[in-house]
Image (cartoon, rainbow, N blue to C red; front, side, top):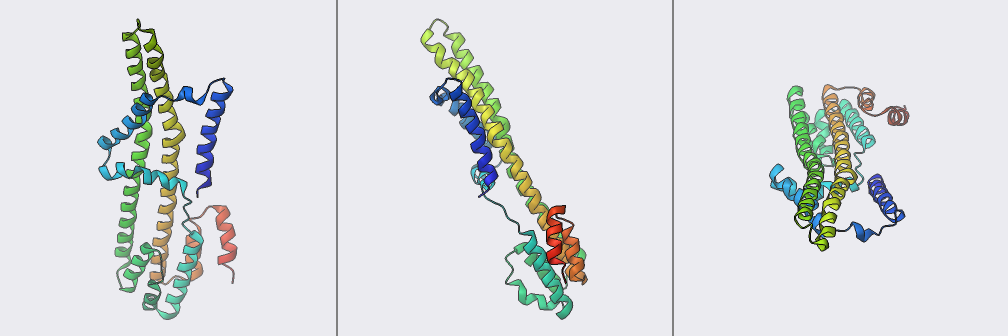
Length: 260
């Protein structure tokens, strides 16, 4: 569970609810079905024009990732690669083959299998970096889809405002229609602003941060695999990988991993 996402969502909506109530209004005052359909239904369906069918249908699964705690276990990765480096230096690269089946990380497993098979280092790097770049492209496409929803929602909110105003102006003589049309005119803008600023844009930013972290871990894996192939000392390999971490994490792990 990603606590920060829950805190952000609950906190933002909580402040809005408090603002509504302390302003002397009720929550039902801000409920309007036509406005909801225009903003949320219209903006979501607009994604089918912008993105692929699979990314649009899967956007809720993509958003769901922001509510889950993403752990890439950098410490475990460094420990695993240092252990393999030590074994490779002691028994040779072929000795790593028996350890491959126990690896959970398919990315590292593929890279080390190439190393065990005697593949040239440049080819290993190229293949692993290509897989990394393809992963990033897939992530970017999904993130752009979420971000576009955040762009379309306020636009549909403004469109709903225009619809409400047109309906109001065309029926000025009908006083009973003024209230519903004015509600559509104002609440659609309210819904569009909420959808973009409280949900879609923050979710998009969190997904970008998750992608950056996963990409960094993949880069660490590439560096580690190539260091093992080059026969680097395990401590040298560990020092290389620690440079990818922020200073606080690096200082904590360095004491543990680099001790004699």
